[in-house]
Image (spheres, rainbow, N blue to C red):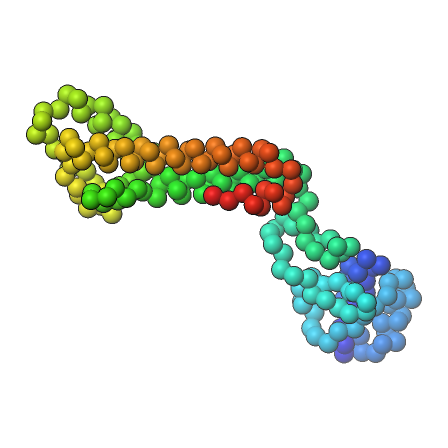
Length: 194
């Protein structure tokens, strides 16, 4: 038995059929009006198309939303530009959240958390510094859960690094958002990365 591919004029395979003889395939063509191509193999070879009588397996689908364009012989994303922009913004927001929580290295002090809770805690303690005695110290947990002892000199250094990191992440996110809003097609959106 051989595997026959019955296809439309654009090359899209309408169906496949195992046939004992080529005469059986010709009978199917007579009934359906669809030409056929033969390829050795088993059913379940993935999405295929026929070009110049040859059966060609489509390249892997880039994403679940991509649809194969048989005329262009390539995958394309059928979503409207607004949907593509929303998808790009979701991608950037995920990257922004990762960057926001990645921590910041403070030379001589170590790496510190930069997530939302850390920003609130740092801001709250920073606001009290003018009211602290000159010998004030605080034990502060680093990103790796070790403890740093910070004083009136080292705490502001750490606080400014944490808060600057957060500000920089948000600034970078706003810039990417602006680029997404200005993008005019899917290719331009694909170029926008974190």
